Length: 55
Image (cartoon, rainbow, N blue to C red):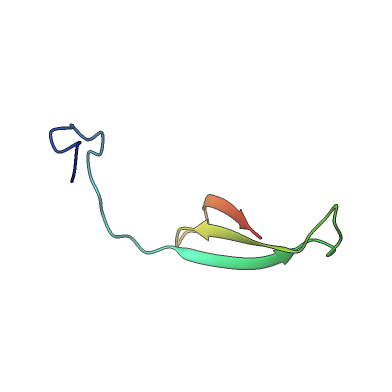
């Protein structure tokens, strides 16, 4: 059951947009520097919007 059904959300707007995602591999593959993916998200003008890293 949803106990928060009366909770007011802070979300003002949600909108579908187009971004460019670049996926790169980083790391040496060692314990101190494991291989991982880095995702960078850009708009169509080339402005970096966000970066995320995943193992």
